[in-house]
Image 1 (cartoon, rainbow, N blue to C red):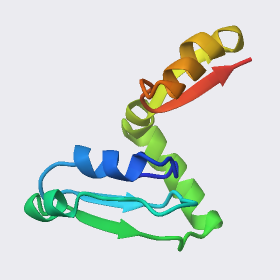
Image 2: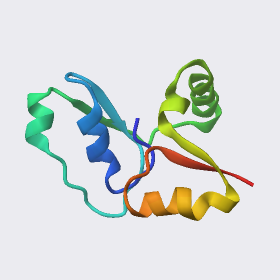
Image 3: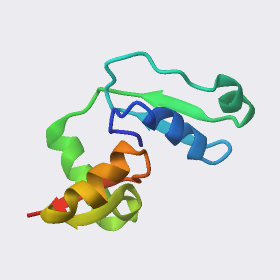
Length: 106
């Protein structure tokens, strides 16, 4: 599930899914994105999109999924104290070395 809308995220999600896997794109993008279609075809990757969500139904289901599975651990990056955000969070992000979401504690 790619929900960030980050420029590199759709290609990264598609590249990291297993052969025959599925990728759901829900992050919104402000510009066109290029994808490696030949690789997707040869690996039989299915790509789905949606904006059809109902908050009363989807948010509780999503929260349940996060509590019952490893999705949160896999997709979340480091938890950083606010005073280390620049060196340990923003700099790796700017240098494209960050993985997952960067969570900040006050």
